[in-house]
Length: 235
Ligand code: FPP
Image (tube, rainbow, N blue to C red):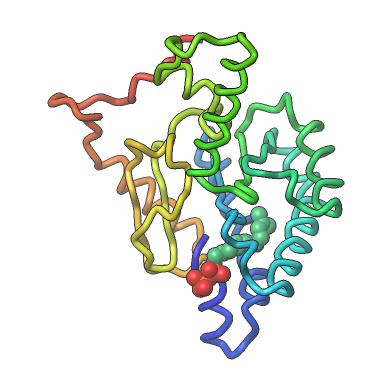
């Protein structure tokens, strides 16, 4: 969700005001995605690397997150939206965990759409965490290292629980993946837009989805396929 800082600075405001405006865009896009019938929406709200930002900005982001979770509770419940979080959420302050954890539990059975917040998240960190967990299981004698293959590894990647990434949208003119959903996005279609996140609206989301619909997804094969075969798709 890039461009909050630039949006604010271009209007002579502090970067934190851009994040506030960005949280309004989150509301708008969650609603729009639900209306469109998107099954899973994952928002990169805070990266592992974002902890390095100035303390007041980090604190403002945590406060916004708490505010968002408190004010959106009704909306999530009414619209059947399940809330999840991926990342090293144990690093989040108690003020966020105190609202995040109960809301995830309360919405756990809802299936209208899954909204995942990537918080204190990094794609490499997630992969390293999976490797560590598997290594620990092997050391404990619960897993034979020869059993570790792509399917078993993937089954342990939390962000892939909702499926692999079909479309990855990056706002703010940057054309990078920047450590987002690295495992699941291996065959994602990428959509880059100059629009700054606070300005990103329903029409921009539709444009991204329409662009996605025109792509020919081949997954390394020669014929086109509607969907990448997913080991857990048959479940
Ligand atoms: C990147 O833009 C954005 C962030 C690091 C924070 C994103 C957070 C929100 C949109 C609001 C809080 C989240 C929720 C879920 C309510 P940037 O600051 O790097 O902007 P720049 O590219 O213009 O510098």
